[in-house]
Image 1: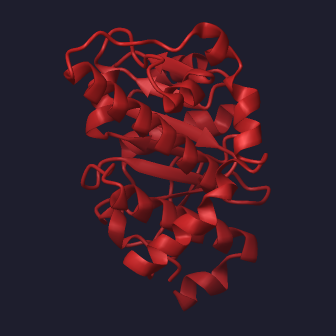
Image 2: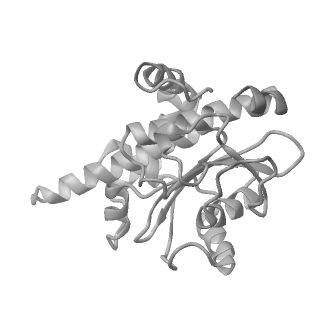
Image 3: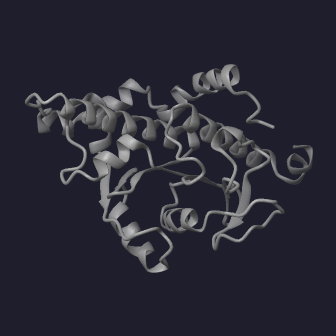
Length: 250
């Protein structure tokens, strides 16, 4: 830890700690897929550098110092014994490049998320959680494992200005100004999918929330979060992590 901490700014170290915490929280909530998904964060500063998971390390093992720093092309700019998932940064790099506000991008292959991504109608307005997602949701059709550079402009165009992206037959993606914001969005996305899968499995007729309520949910979200977004829940999530899986800040 001391070697990496001495090489980076205080601002980068804070992002490293939050991103490492987000990786461990994804594992704690059961959204990880062994080592095969990825969360990224932009490093503060004029250089277009990003942090990503050391490919091969389990999410509940990741620390602030173990995160790999890469450039916009996915090349390592600091020494690391671990490689980078090429498919991971294909998805993330184009979003970071197109969206100045997308400082953190999270992508998961959760079972509930993949299940709903395979449903033709996608996310339905069945729960309060789903309303926050539907207010800023886009879809991107599956094109195989994300290794094709030609897919990038289509992915960016499909996402647009939204913060939630359902990758058809693949999984979920969120972006936010901070790891805290992107994590809160992922929590809501996953909860909406889990509720939908359970509601549909019940076999009864489903009640959809009326469209005027869906349309007005954004203003209500600002009231509920006191304008703080993910920062409202983030300190409590870190305290939970400190109790159950400390060491992410190493």
